[in-house]
Image (cartoon, rainbow, N blue to C red; front, side, top):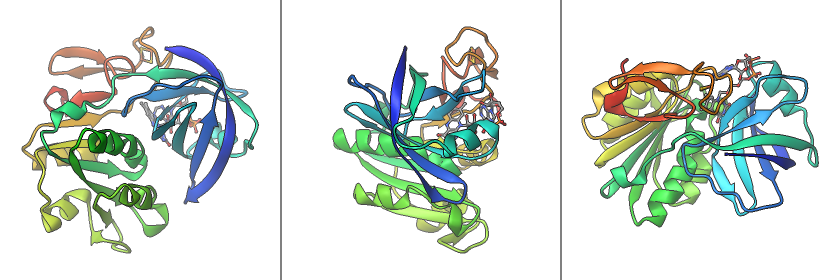
Length: 245
Ligand SMILES: Cc1cc2nc3c(=O)[nH]c(=O)nc-3n(C[C@H](O)[C@H](O)[C@H](O)COP(=O)(O)OP(=O)(O)OC[C@H]3O[C@@H](n4cnc5c(N)ncnc54)[C@H](O)[C@@H]3O)c2cc1C
Ligand code: FES
């Protein structure tokens, strides 16, 4: 884990309350899918954990939703501004879980880390299908970027404005894609439903409020099948069999 200064290259709204921020630094960056960065927001003591959606040779691409004071401040920051990040944090997805065909299941901005995972799977010669769930059409993001990688993308929206009306599980039942494992990131109820519905091996990325973000304070501990685990350091990605819903 390193503490490094990045500079904002761009910070643009891409969907409702949703921003894509590109950050560059002065040295190579090595991050795997499912890992996250912890951002020091000027004026706030606690850092904000955000998943890495893509890597650049000297940077990272993140997607964030404006939900509170810290992300609001972040959304007002302009190109050139410095940000101090801790990275890389956590244990990410394991592409080796997939024999040949992966199903990537994202809820809302849970799609973000699945983009880097898709790139890793494709680079390893594997295939992927993405299923992304949103409340409404104006929240949809990352679908075009995933399609641009050449992978099929199924969408579900709760209001039926785009794709299957309902949940990601409805879209999966409708399209019946072939897969030998799944990877999921999104709201807990969505991942619980996904794990109940799908009987292949799978990994899920959990979200907890964090203090240190780096394994020291135990503030993000969750109970798992193998005992207490820190989401920041032992996760955020866990085997589906580990999670006690
Ligand atoms: C491993 C991990 C990866 C994440 N990846 C993303 C991502 O890619 N994009 C994205 O938009 N959001 C992501 N989140 C959620 C994101 O961290 C929160 O939305 C953000 O910290 C909210 O900050 P705020 O100041 O706007 O909200 P406030 O509610 O004002 O925050 C108050 C405090 O609570 C914490 N907090 C609030 N909501 C959450 C939350 N859901 N999870 C963890 N801490 C929270 C904040 O970090 C802060 O310390 C991730 C969370 C975790 C744990
Ligand atoms: S946030 Fe401190 S141990 Fe996880």
